[in-house]
Image 1 (tube, rainbow, N blue to C red):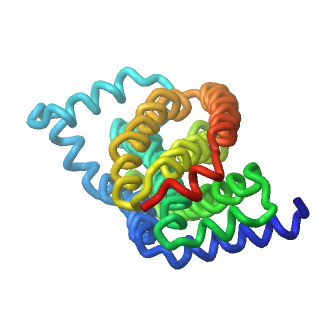
Image 2: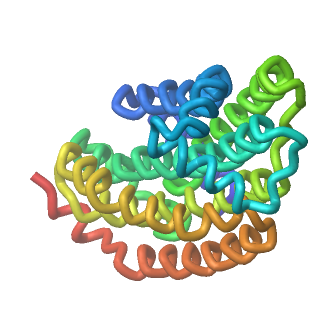
Length: 271
């Protein structure tokens, strides 16, 4: 297929995403939560530290014990080390964001076309299955990752300003944070989108596809994020290794989607 035809289909997918009101609330809400949550914890840091030292809050006490055990945390004061731990680990939320966004968009990619009866004209064109799936995948992943990166940059700038006022030190993103955002987040987003695309191809109604994605695809992806993302926050090489593993998984999932993609079934098997 010619490149301009593939780009035409990709522009169509991005246009459909912009007009899809079912996914836009998440695109607006998740970045706000990711940016504001660290600021809230920085404001509450003196209270958390006091509760941890007096033992009045079990969660705060566990946080204090974690700070004492983690030798990778720099800081001249206990308050600064606790702030660095919170800011480092909260970056995990930025790994969650592209997974939820890309999976939500991909879950609607095919089933929404079925409901609107726009899939049949697309499948009647000479576009290859590989190119169609690739256009759906790129349209789901790229906006999710770009929004995540933009939120991370804005959130990091706000954390730098807030940490200067709170603990008198500018807290910068760690190497693990950057590796996670640059490598793990896109790779995890692709994996989640490919799983959701398979769901979208199998379901005939939008609510069913969205519910299955929310109850199965996203939780499974969250387990992978915890297993790979937490070590990446502390050790950058773990993030690189996790990204390589996810890239291999993504290639396998894409080949599986391509192998199971049946035009005739999609054309006939919907209500």
